[in-house]
Image (cartoon, rainbow, N blue to C red; front, side, top):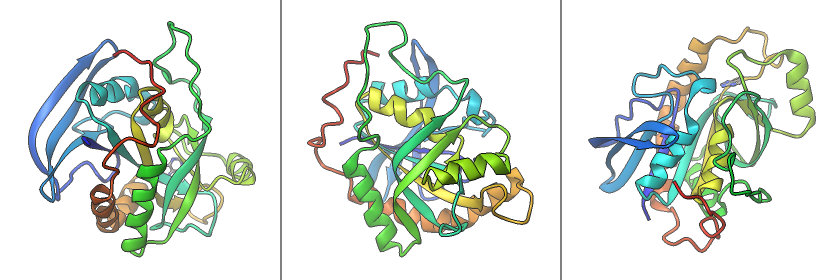
Length: 257
Ligand code: HPA
């Protein structure tokens, strides 16, 4: 199994990752930079979601080029890491959620590989790979992290944070976290037939649930604070990633990159 990690805020400088080579991978969707290296002796691709200098805002990321690049590199399984605001006091900053489902509230993103034919409608009854998700749950357990094991993620367009009324609406759906990067990444990964699981890092309580106003610098600082726990979770998860693809994620994709 060839594995990749997609990370954003706070994960860009992976101190624990021995980088070997930078691949600039082009496809008809554009190009993406994927770093090839090793983690604990195991080969791993790392894709810095916001670009190598963290300069691309969530709404401007070329998610299609990134997922296409992983397919071109013949990656089988992917873990996405994303910073999120919590919709419930039960998941305070510093906690995590292994994603099991999402609600797409994004508005302006290229969110499919199948926009020009052939006509393909992808089943999303199981949005995330169950086996990658199980590996992440093991990681959370072993790291003794506070976490939600069936997290529901609301993907928003940003770059602004939510209003208090939006947060009340999202919380009323039963969702746990809100963020700007997991959608359409999760959609495209599934369309591409990758085994994709995701872990949300709770960096803050969503608007209206905390007294303070929300600032990107605080979100970044909170992500850095969680980095050690996150690395523990990921190390375990990467060791426990599935050795085959019997989960069925691969069989549905008719995508030709
Ligand atoms: N809202 C949206 N995206 C986020 C948040 C938030 O509160 N925190 C980190 N990413």
